[in-house]
Every structure is written in C-alpha cells, then in structure tokens.
Image (cartoon, rainbow, N blue to C red; front, side, top):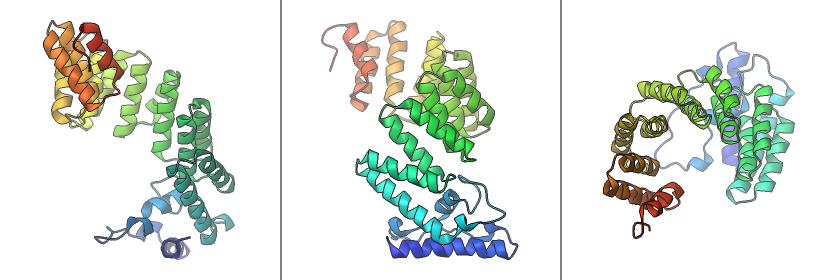
Length: 294
C-alpha cells in the first residue's frame, strides 16, 4: 500500500469526521487544485471521499450518523481494494478484477465505483444481462450518482431494452447533458425519431457546441427523411468537431441521396481515414462501384 496516499485519505476523512462531531457541515472541507508537477497517483481528493460516502455529490448521500463500517481504517481498506481491482482491470485480468469488485460490494454495498467497474467487465465480456443486473443492484443499494443511471440506460438501450432505458432516463435526466444524450440515443434505438429529435434539440439548447449531439440529430433527421435538415446538422457537427467519422458517413448518405455521388464518395473516404473500422462507410463505398473502396 502507498503509505503517503493512505495518510492523505485518513487525513481527509478525519477532517470530515471532525466537522461532523462539531456539528458543522462536511462541505467546510475545501478541495483545491493540486500543485503543478505533483504525481496524481499519490493524490486523494473529493472524488474518493464521495465514492466512500463522506461528502455529497457522489455515489452515496452524506451520512448524518456514522457506524463502525465508516471507521477510517475500514474505508482505507476499501480504497486499497479499489486500487487492486483497478490495477487488475488495466492489466487485462478481468476475472480477478471482477472478484475484487464483488468483494467490495459485499463488504460495503454503497461503493459506486465497484458496481460500475463490475458492470463494465460484464459488458465487455458480452454479458449484457449481468451488466444490467449489476447496475440495477447499485440503484437498489441507494447509489445516487447519475453516471450509474446513464450507464444503465446505455446498456439497456444497446441490449434490446430501449423502451426501458427511455423510462429510466426520462424520469431522471433533468438538465444533465450526458443523461439527455443517453435518452436521445435510446429514442434512436427504439426507432422513435420524433422523440430523439426533440431530445437532441433540447440538448443543443443547453450545449450548442456539442458536435456529437449535432451528429446524432442529423442522423435521426436522415432516418426521418428530413434530408435538408440532416445535411445542415451534419455539416454543423463536422464544423465543430472534424474528427467525427460518423458525421461524414451519414453526410455521405445525404449527398448520395441528393445526386452528389463524388461528394458522397469523398465523405465516406474521409470517414474511413478517421476510423478504418467504420463498416457503414466501407459498405457504402463498395456499393457505389469498383475503384472507390479502400
């Protein structure tokens, strides 16, 4: 264990506990920017305390009363286990990491990071049912962090349960751009173009510089046969973020449908330059004739 990191974690936790004992709000503990050049691996800050339930805005609500499970020594052990699991995951030892995250959840069921990472492992292993069940268990355990709901919505939508994702995210998205994006994607996967267009338009009112939102809006408009609107949105997406290969792919379809074959070919070739794995762009190039593929 890194003793410097452990000491920092204990110091931060004890500071919050002192506030609680004095009847003062834990938010009196202030987090400041790290000094230049400091190795982030040895730092502990607000995110870790949030994940352990000591301050608000994270995975668990701030506790009014602390129990033996909130003993700083116990929480340092949870932090050590999270580091162990994360190291195993980064090293490609997914099964080992999964076992660690399961042990954390059994030991402290409100540790948001453990649920989210475990669900990610299941998703990467093409076990969507277990990924969904893991995040649903997190919600039942009282996890409140929005990222869990957003990720659950994504997994539901991409595993054939788009309507369930819409129900989940519609009730909780609020003005969170990531949640609204997830909701729009769920509408797209459900084939509900009007809902998707409405949702992406709402997102762009909040964040007009979101290139991916413009791409998704344009793609949905194309599906809804609004070719003119789609072209406007897709060109706006590319103007904001020229690295969006999907925007070039969809724009190529718009150009092909409006008789601009050479421009369409150029758009699909650009998409493949940005993302050689773009199967849609590759298929479209092959379809328009010989000599246009990679």
